[in-house]
Length: 53
Image (cartoon, rainbow, N blue to C red; front, side):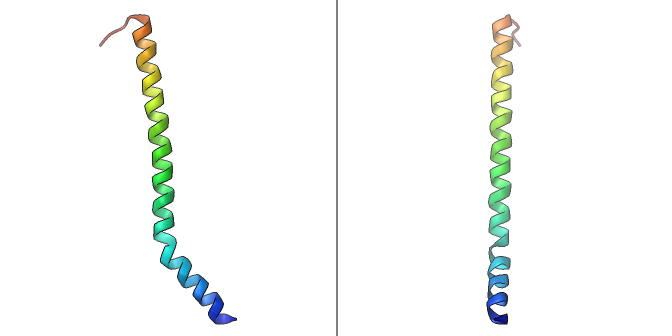
């Protein structure tokens, strides 16, 4: 029984950096997507009002 727990723990420790990396990549991707659409909306709002840079 104790070896099953140790095996599960070592497997979790082995895969934890990969899981954390995937989580960080997912959150960064969501943030970039939200930032892109915010900038896109601001660009079109400024274009619609006739303000140009």
